[in-house]
Image 1 (cartoon, rainbow over the protein chains, first blue to last red):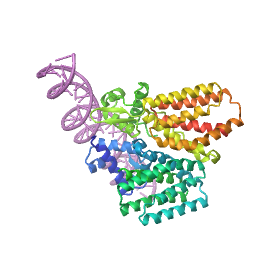
Image 2 (cartoon, protein in one colour):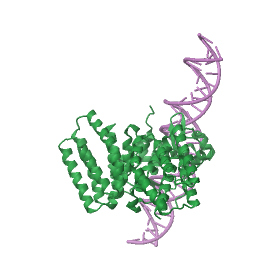
Image 3 (cartoon, chains in turn orange, green, red, purple):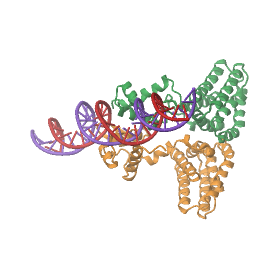
Image 4 (tube, helix red, strand yellow):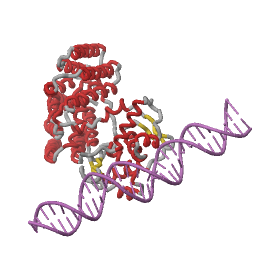
Amino acid sequence: MNQARLSDQAYAGIVEIIKSEELEVGARLPSEARLAETFGVSRAIVREALVRLASDGITEARRGAGSFVKSRPSERLAAFMPMTELPTTLGSYEVRFVLEAEAARLAATRRTAQEMAHVEDGMAMLREALLSSEPAHAEDMELHRRIAEATGNPAFLLAFNALWPDVEKIMRAGVDISRSRPPEVVATMLREHEVIVAAIRAQDPEGAALAMRWHLWEGRRRLMP
Amino acid sequence: MNQARLSDQAYAGIVEIIKSEELEVGARLPSEARLAETFGVSRAIVREALVRLASDGITEARRGAGSFVKSRPSERLAAFMPMTELPTTLGSYEVRFVLEAEAARLAATRRTAQEMAHVEDGMAMLREALLSSEPAHAEDMELHRRIAEATGNPAFLLAFNALWPDVEKIMRAGVDISRSRPPEVVATMLREHEVIVAAIRAQDPEGAALAMRWHLWEGRRRLMP
DNA sequence: GGCTATAACCTGTCTAACAGATTTTCGAGT
DNA sequence: ACTCGAAAATCTGTTAGACAGGTTATAGCC
């Protein structure tokens, strides 16, 4: 097993600092020396972590001045999930990852008021079903379908309908394995959907795409931890 | 202006080595010490460059063994074509834009030698058909289908098959309108496909995705200028 | 208060070293 | 000859300490 590298830990540690200290965009991180001391590693390791953070667009280094927050990691990490590592047994998730993310983006851009109302209705139905501890696969699917519809592009529905039998099979299998869903999982699933719908409501295309990717990524993780 | 960092030069230098030495995916790069000597910098700088290359998915470090090529680097043109401007009458192109670009990327990453040969065959068939001035819709479709197959993920084929009737209808309509295809258009279409296949052959994921996007974008423009 | 020189701090870079993982080499034994 | 295993050679991961040169803060002077 490839033992974890210290620079990975430093990377995670710095992300943690940005999040927990609530460093705003533009704020300066602690100096390399201080970070090294904090994590108990050498400056070289901290620098390697910072190079990666900069490459990920999270920080920016200014010679002689320090490293600065460029964009908050919570809003950025989701965009960098390596699709290449998805097991092909969950192949339909790989396709959904690009297809539904684009659908969410376009829905946020082009949705009419009527389509939005339709999406909100779907969300309400999903909320009710989830809170009454039912499987809710049908409602889940229906919400995703309505988001695809809100793109105004029927071709998205065509592609989705081709995938859904597969997705449903996977979902059912997942629930069969771990029959009881703890309430916090239900709450998380609900929140993920709410965030997507909120972004579409707010006509925030990038936010919608990101929220959808995040939701699918987490969904895959729930099915195959 | 922020003066160029040595690690940036090292990054570019290593990319150059991978390209000019034609290092295959899986091949081992020179050791950090040797790279440092080559570029006249310290090992720490080379390491920072390698961390960035790994973060970009181009190389992979194995402790005690060396750094290995994970995917061939491409020209990072990162041209972004705004799909939002596509008329929904050509909706299936909008879906293909995300779906097939991802398929091309994954095909470049995961294709086996056998799948590659299958793609090359499809390319040869398309070339022959186009050069004999036939419609060649079937061959076009078959090549795209084989690329989707080369992802190793059957879900891509599911989605494609749902879209293709639509795509073919659009293609036929396009040819009916402008019945004669000038030879330079045929040559361009051929070249676009060749670039995609070449990128998949070279195991260059970003290049393959970019080439596919470009091809679809141009294709849409040919149909509706 | 405003201005400037200087000190304090910070990143970018280098050298030299060692631990531990991996690959290669080479020799012993069959 | 051929296999097997151990030692040697390489290689990455990591540390410490140092210095040049850029940036920011401070302190004192007007």
